Amino acid sequence: VQVVESGGGLVQAGGSLRLSCVVSGRIIFSTKAMSWYRQAPGSQRELVATITGDGSTNYADSVRGRFAISRDNMKKSVYLQMNNLKPEDTAVYYCKLELLSVYWGQGTQVTVSS
Image 1 (cartoon, rainbow, N blue to C red):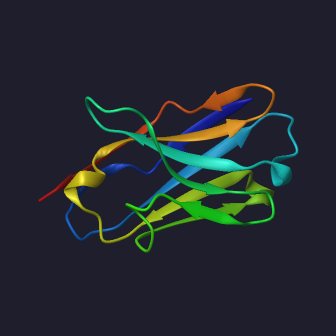
Image 2 (image 1 turned 135 degrees about the horizontal axis):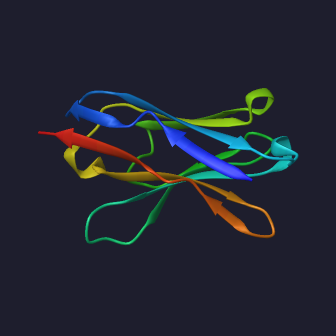
């Protein structure tokens, strides 16, 4: 199983980015919850958003109303639409898949300038 993120970059405050995460391997993706985490320099990794297999979502208070998580089961992909970005959203963003083991991607850097 592999997890690969993409879509990070440098954006000004108030801007938007869309992160993508693609899962490969022989799993029944549609039944698995997927999560986005982020880690800023000097900080612990924190949960940003989760989407279950049936599409239920949950968000950290700091991003609720600005970020939206979604999935495409046919493409084994999950997305994070990030709007109204703030400098404090600057971090490396990771995608997580949890089976019997936990699989992380390599991360994608998001930098928001003020």
